[in-house]
Length: 115
Image (cartoon, rainbow, N blue to C red; front, side, top):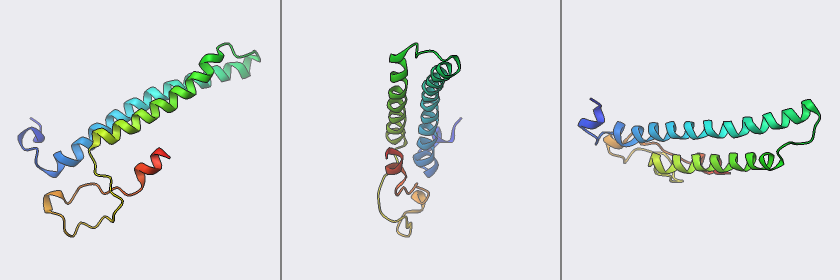
């Protein structure tokens, strides 16, 4: 039996369990993203090796767009599923209760991931 099934009020269950679940989903969606990028590389590699014209010009345009859309979906789903508070303040935990002392303090990381 999982510890969060018994008592879900601990910091482990409130903070790190959603982060683990959102990280797992992020990696799965990014693996799908890699599929699109590898397909694009295969098409362009075939063009360079064989010296022919691009056989599927629509796919060569579609794969990069699908890749950035899927990447954006991965970031947004991680933000929504992780339930982390995004505040641009300092990370001092002096006035924080002991059961919330391990909450993740995020400063500029999510902003950089979208940029």
